[in-house]
Structure formats: C-alpha cells, structure tokens
Image (cartoon, rainbow, N blue to C red; front, side, top):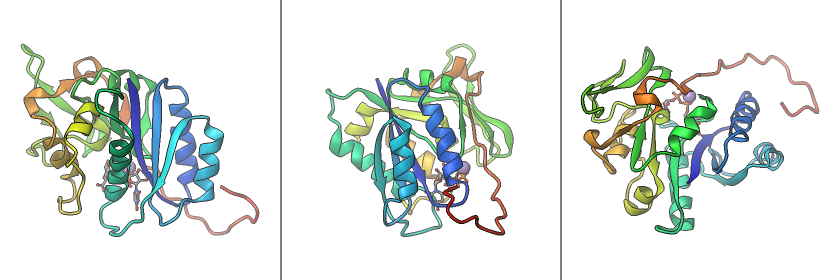
Length: 233
Ligand code: UGA
Ligand code: MN
C-alpha cells in the first residue's frame, strides 16, 4: 500500500530545519506520498525548492489559516480533499497518516502504518505529560480496552494525532469525515476517529503497543537578533 502522509506546515525560523528532517526520514521509506499543506495564502519558494530537491513523491498544497486558534485544521482538511478528489475506492490502496512537521519519526513506524486494515494505533512518546501515551490492551484478547494519557484519558479516543493511521478505503468511504473548528481544542483526534471506528475495533500495532516509534518533540523557538543577508535558512 501507499502511505499518504498529510503534513500541515507554516513559515517560521525553524521551518526549513523541520522539513529537512522529516523529508530525509521519508526518503528512507518506500511507497510514501507526502502531501504537504502550507498554512499560507500562497505557496512559498522555500517549500517549493525543498520539495524539488527531495526526490520524494509529493503533492504541494496551501490553505490559508482563517483561524489561528486551531493549528493545522483546515490544512489537514485540504489534504483530505485532495485525497478524495484524486484517489479512487477499489483502485488505489493505501493508508492515511497525519504527520506533523516537528515530531520525530522512526522509519520502523512506517512498516506498522503499512499494516493498517481499518484504523491502527500505537504509543506516542513525550506527549500529554507522560513519557509516552499508549493504549491499554486486554492481555487475553489483545484488544484495546482503554488509554494511558496524561490529558483527558476519558476521551472516546485519547490518542494524539501521531498515534493513529486510517486505511484509505475508509477515508474514501466516510467522505464527510473532517476536522473542524467546532471541535474543542484537544478533541480533534477523538472526534475525527469517531467517524471511522470504535475502541473495540482499533488495531494495536508496534508489537502490541510495547514499542515507541514516534515522539511528540517540539522545537524550541530560537531567539534571532539579526539576519545574515543572502542566506535562506
Ligand atoms: C498537538 C498535536 O500533536 C497536533 O497534532 C495538533 O494539531 C495540535 O496539538 C493542536 O491541535 O493544536 P502541537 O505540538 O501542540 O501538537 O502543535 P504544532 O506542532 O505546533 O502544530 C501541529 C501541526 O500544525 C504542525 O505540523 C505545524 O507545522 C502545523 N501548524 C501549526 C500550522 O500549520 N499552522 C500553525 O499556525 C501552527
Ligand atoms: Mn508539534
């Protein structure tokens, strides 16, 4: 299957560093199509050039912010819209993953994503006030019974954006499923997943959720006191 990785991104000092890191991770992954959606009213040359040099299979989109309070919402929806207008049920095979530009991804994660039949889940490191958020599995059946999350573990799906992927068939079937400004902050993942599946149906991956292959790292905002002319950083 093809992995469709949807990444919202926005202009700031660390953008090129982040996109370099993530594009070079993706260069090690077979069968990935990167859908990069700029949070801007126009595509930027910085991103255009970086993508051209990456040799990755990419689709470059942009979607202007509208409402800054919710990060990445309309950009992820623009990615979904592209997928639904360009891919066809029963012809294209794949898995959709929402890949923020600042997290750290092991190449092993993508081997897990490729296994997703409906909705796959796995632990995410360094998030929600814990060393990792993870799924609680029934030792007998191996099914998900609950969540270890430092923040609102009673959400229907207490899973970070980095902790799940959805089969393309489902994305193309449930065409109304979108992120929305109406969803409370921190409930985007839970409400989006509710369109597709139930807790009982989740597919625990990464060795029954015993391995961490993605970390919710956040890059410190640098203090820039001067600009060297003529350098794209
Ligand atoms: C957490 C979650 O891990 C995100 O998936 C979720 O979107 C976010 O909270 C939220 O709902 O606010 P966090 O590290 O706080 O992540 O968020 P960022 O990494 O700053 O942003 C998530 C994604 O949106 C990134 O790919 C970032 O480049 C993008 N973004 C951020 C924009 O496109 N525009 C912005 O103004 C800010
Ligand atoms: Mn982040």
